[in-house]
Amino acid sequence: MMLDYHSLLLALGVSAACLMVTMFGTWFSRRTDSFLLTLVVALCLIVSGIFAYSSYTVETGILRVSVAYTFLMAGFSMAYAAAVQFRSGAKPWALASMLSVINAALGLPLLIAGYDGLGLIVMNIATTALLMGTAWQYWMARHEAPGPLCGIAALYALSAISFALCAVVLIDGRQWVMGHAPDNWAENLNIGVCIAGMTGIGSLSLALHQWRLAAHHRREAITDSLTGLLNRRALFEKYGNRLITPSMAVIVFDIDRFKTINDQHGHAMGDHVLRLFAEDLNNGTNTRHVVGRLGGEEFAMILDNALPGRAERIANDIARRFAAREIDVGADAPLRCTVSAGVAIGVIGGQPFDAVLSLADNALYEAKRAGRDRVEVAGYLRSVGLGETRTSA
Image (tube, rainbow, N blue to C red):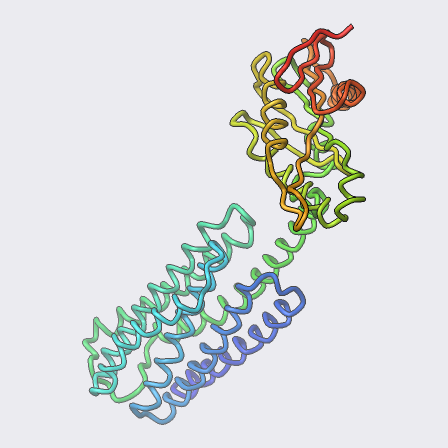
């Protein structure tokens, strides 16, 4: 029976080693998912612990079981830290090190003192807590990829239960001192669950990686790489099939004399100006809004539930704030930039987004022709300049 258990441990170790190699290859192909590398480190420690524990089942000894305990606790602590890293982006090393030291302090003195059964109970309870915590971290992040993450959480929780059963059996039998590796139905069940769980977690982790990769490509397809705003395609995907009603407004902004900025100060400074204006747009209003870059130096803002007159006030506030910026250009005097804007409001019954966008664009060019650094409202016989109101013919 002990030989069978030993063989199962070896099979678990080989399975975990294969998963470790696969995870490393997956991380190496796209290194942005750093939690995968943390998981590789965790699997490396767990594999070392499994093989050390496997040797302990053949030839007992304090040193063997202590080495197995140390590696396994460090590995499961690292796996928990990887889950925290996945959910929050926090660096894993300090957390994993702290948990490893705490678990070593709890169990190693018992093993060294000869209370190997009690030390293994502590190991099983600590592993249960770490695996349940790992399951909880993935469960909390399930909104990102519900299928893979719910499956991973369930498998970690199932593995945790199998370790808890090992502790319960030892406690029930009052096996505080054994002098050998435990041999009971719970241990055999634990090995079987861990082999199945390892395979399932590996498959689901690879599926999760592909899910994240596809989501990354989707984000890239709809995001302007320079400013981080939505691009033109994304705006039309979001609003292309919607009607713009009177409670909604479209504002189109254009940075004045942008070509001159590029010519006099270089394209790097031009890119910096675009990013600064994108920041102003994102922080420009407390009203529900969506902002995007239409292309070049032209931007759009779509306001929802905008009260009458609110859109033009927002456009003027953004324009004033941007004009007040002093942009450092080195030895020269600070650069000041202005923007022009066109505003179009939806009509009763609604208008297609592209039609309202076109009206706002026409109003923008009216503002340009009227001298720039101003806001023009489509459909009104009013032009609102910065600090002045005038009636146009």
